Length: 387
Image 1 (cartoon, rainbow, N blue to C red):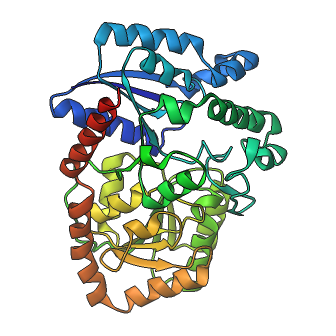
Image 2: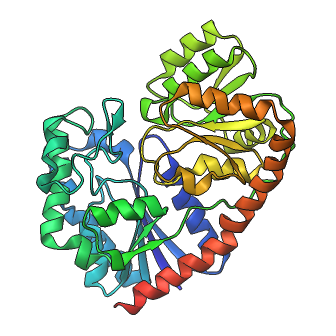
Image 3: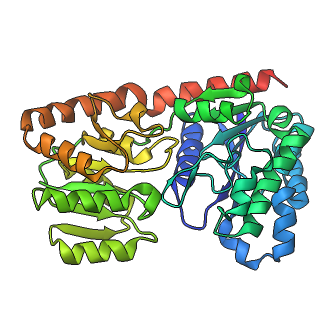
């Protein structure tokens, strides 16, 4: 099978970029011919704002380029990961007009919420879910704290809803958790076109022994990721367990201050993937304190692959990844409950050792490349049969 893989890369590489690269590489390893079409959000600074607004709604240049590529390469499927803002939904129509099946992976809630997170002012917000025109998000400037850019996102979603883009131009939507699927159905996407396929790891790292004697957090340093909850919990733990923090983001100053207050916290910044795996694998546990509706939780399955138990918020898709075989759940936004769950594990080394074995087994049963490849191929075949 020949596949056209389409992705609008982020200004700061994120999970969607990694999944796009991993998935396309896996397809190539399995003998498929994959043609990549990517644009980079680093280029936004060079685009006239009026042209950017127009292209977000409909990028006619991308439409023509993709039609030409499809005519040249003759793929059976065009698989999209992100079209916002440079590629635009016009790309779907380029594929449809050339008779190519369209598959879109939904990594976030962009179609239902201007900021794609269902999160504002430090709490979950569903005000735009099912709202005509997503007016609450516009009024509050939920995308980049700007009413203008929030209106552009909402207008793009609204116009393409009226145009029938989501119902007619896309053959299959891949959702990466049951929680996300339920939200998209609630938001009006056609249930018959939604199919569940979780993320995966490839290649798979070897498990580690977890004898480093510390906990680890990996991710963006931001409020929706639960950084405040994490740091408050560590104040309550009173030096029982050192903490390593990997990542960067807008709450970096708060982390710097916490490091000064609590010498048992170490901020390591960004690290390359092999080093992250080593640090996670040697940790006694990974803390995943998110306060927004995570659509999946890639860092959780990375920990499970290393055999590292996860203590995570009971919110969004996280309970689909973390259970009594892979870790513990705590009340989202509650640092006292987080500290209590960590303390209970530290007081029960036999439970911690058991979780290291079952966490890896949980990963192997659900998140390997072999299982994922078979699901992906079935989705492509189903989408193609609709043409």
